[in-house]
Image (cartoon, rainbow, N blue to C red; front, side, top):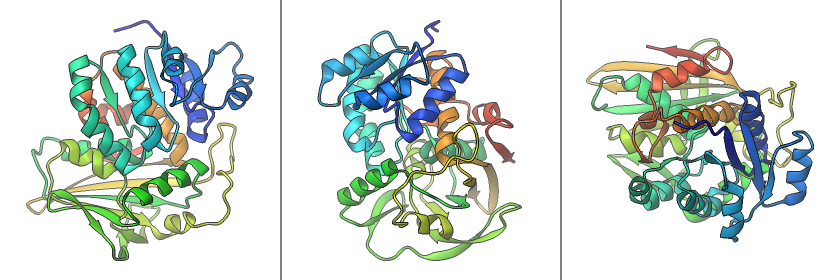
Length: 343
């Protein structure tokens, strides 16, 4: 336990970073504004007088050490995470601080689990990657759906997005992932990750009301596949994304999502449904809300609160579902941030 209410936010001026800073301030925490661009940090700092502004570069370990000095944890919001995760994690290890990020990049998250699990455990610190809409939310829903099951025959996750206007950061991260996998698709089947070169199938998914039956792209693998399979036993992860959202990823308009309320959220709505199947029995859980980038802020900030407060299951590199009581975590965000339906 600690009374320290200071959290360093690397990439604080980015689209998701701004939501995270706002959520921390709203909850009474004191964020340290950090990132690579001093002018953008100063512009953000003008909206939050009195907060520490600490420019830092992933190429300058000393600057990262200064950015994290005195913090109780660090939240990394700066992508592409293939470039930023390792340097910021190394700084967190040096400072012996918890590290959380909002990475949606499959490969970056696999790297974090592969490279830092033992070191973080030996250091007695907690690392929670992908603690966001992609990665964290689906993992919590899957863990809640599984309940007391030791394993499942398959877990399906369907993303019902009304639309998707990706941020420049999302586009850049996607480009890095495509380069790393040489343009191939990735799926989890027969108990392991596999590459595919064919076109992803188009099918249908019947969401709960009011969304109903929607055309979806099948095998739309996101970070949830990494987090779910890290601690839940299943040979198959089946993932689906609404066709309307996938089309938005190729929109030539590179502008950021447009805010429609005072919090900065866009008009985008989401519904995430998870179905765990075992021996002919199904268990379901779902969550809906507004703006996939905005919802990442209460997810990662609530996770940071629990980690800092010692309300976490173990040390090392942990997913949301194994780090926390999944049902309790989701219910803590219900009403204000999420609408839940859990069996």
